[in-house]
Image 1 (spheres, helix red, strand yellow):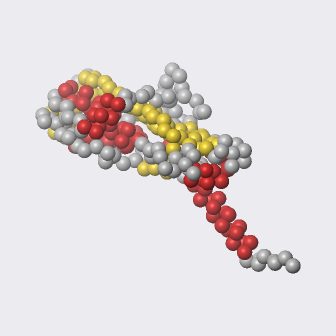
Image 2 (cartoon, helix red, strand yellow):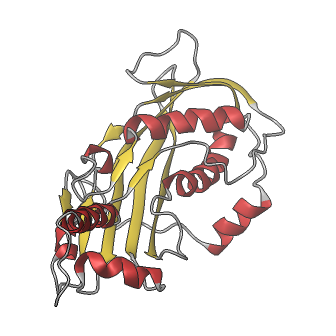
Image 3 (spheres, helix red, strand yellow):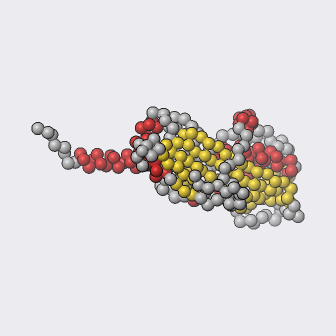
Amino acid sequence: MKKSVEPSIQPRRLACLLALSVLCSACFTTVGKWTYPSGRYPTLASARPARVSVVVERLLDLRSETNRTWMTWAYVPFFPGGWTHCDRPEATEPGNYTPFYRMDPPADLARSIAVELAREGLVTHAEYSPDGARPAHHDFVLRGTLRTFYIHETRVSYGVSINAFLLWALGLPVGSSDNGFLVELELVDARDGRVLWQGRVFDADHHVQGWYYGPAWYRFPWMWERRLRATLGELAPVLGAEPPPLPPGLAAELAATPAAMPVCLGVDSDQPCTAR
């Protein structure tokens, strides 16, 4: 005679299954937050700072507007995975299978430049101006254009939908992530408006992700810091300062990994990037 299953057990099993589905669905989305400095590199100050003040203006935002996700395909049985293409990751909504990055790139990147000028002792005073307002006495204005700041991600579900977490636990790749940015800068003489210097801060990378390996999904803070500090070393003589020495770890990274140009270069690019 077969034993009957207690009615209370089935609802419990259903609840467990639903909870597992919610847990696994979170594995197909990522959430991050901007911080600066990154905490990866020590600070070294200039031995001869410039006795000038610099105002850093909010960046002009000329990024593409594409924010799309195909991550739901990762849930489809027998389909290998899903992917996202987010050119403005701070404009996505958390929980809709897209990357969500908490920051305001035109403001936060410009603010980080002012922070770096001050903490490296390159100038007497550096100030961020969110609305274009400038103090009465300043020598230079540093302004720029944000061309791209994107996150592209993939998830590999191996055709087994939410059960892919079992394969990830065995060490198979979870997916991949691409981070990229490009900012064009120019230094302007506050007295006559002459452009004294132009430069770019850019980088892009690609990494395979796994539960037991691979870097963080969002690498922007330290990627940006290492390229920014190298660029400010070029700007220092124009300001009248001596470039600060680079920490050994940072110098080794710059030598081993030259900056890579991002694949998406904004709305004014000759070859606009389209969603994959």
